[in-house]
Image: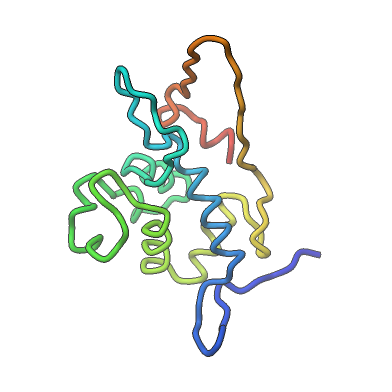
Length: 160
């Protein structure tokens, strides 16, 4: 039998998100961050582990996966609007904290539960579908790895 956990806990009289829920949101953030927001400019080594922001395009794709217009309608210009003024973001996208802020401010517990179920999490915040994985490559010469058409293809359908 699966454990059911509440989205919020009360600690020292203060209501806050359940730590397992926050961990699950971190996991979702990493899954949505397909491009890892790295610009590979000539002569510069990309910062491969600098996955700190979700672009408008990534948020739109997430919106498509969960059928949510609030994510589908985000544009790069949205990050400079009043709605995002108190959300952790800049012109390039939402930070991990900003992603959580956007979710908490726009969706009630019932909708959050639906979102989690859609992307493969049960009521105990356990992933029932996909897992994050890391590929480690070693080479004697320069090696380039690309995920082609991650936004235009059906990668999200095959992994979620």
